[in-house]
Image (cartoon, rainbow, N blue to C red):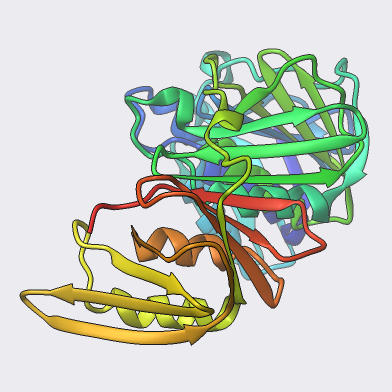
Length: 364
């Protein structure tokens, strides 16, 4: 097997492949990338960690057909540093790979392609073309609140729901929840699916490379195609909790306040807080008083003006959770809906954005 390929074209596929290849796995093959010539002018590049898989069909000049696998990260670094505009790869004896570019020549260890795991086939799935920017935004606005505790695997991803016209993403780690809705004509789903965090991270990277993409769900996979690069994400087989029960329906108290000023005040208060000691928000008569004290550091107090409806209330929050949530909003003004001191707070933009977040309170 031998082929010649433009360096930039090769790196386009290897950049995604090397981030998916699993170097920590007990299966050495999962750290490799599969290279297979197809006809005279196409090279298949594939990588998988058994949960997230990628295939890229790149333009090449093939002298002979065949396939082999080499370390994904090592190959990416070699090609990145290659001096020429083109590189030539040849499969040598014992699955070694010979790489030439200009006057540089490498020989690196490879493995037989027969042991490479089968990558999910995406070409028979029913795809819908959608705006890549909207899907990327939805991922960005829910990814931060995904649970990282692997024992709660049903929360280790984002719930994706689609009616055919409206698409929705929801994530929660048990302490906070984020939910975004957009008019996006995704494939209609009879029930929601849970997309794992690593899959979302790779989807976000792929969505950066074009204005439109194609999306399909064929259980147990979600497929995302951007040009000649296809991503297959194995969905989490679990039941997402009934999130609507967590979202406050009709808060008794509502505060409308400047978003940026609130973020800045919470960051200042966070300097005097800790993981077990949050910040206290006291609201009455249009004034929000933010306080925080730490016996080891000191205390802080700051007042902000806002528009408040309801009776006086004092409530504690983890400032990190609130700041991360508010940072995903673009509205100048936000509303905070509160019922009681032990009830969750509902944060949402004042107008024009179907996005909301729920943060559980802390005892102060």
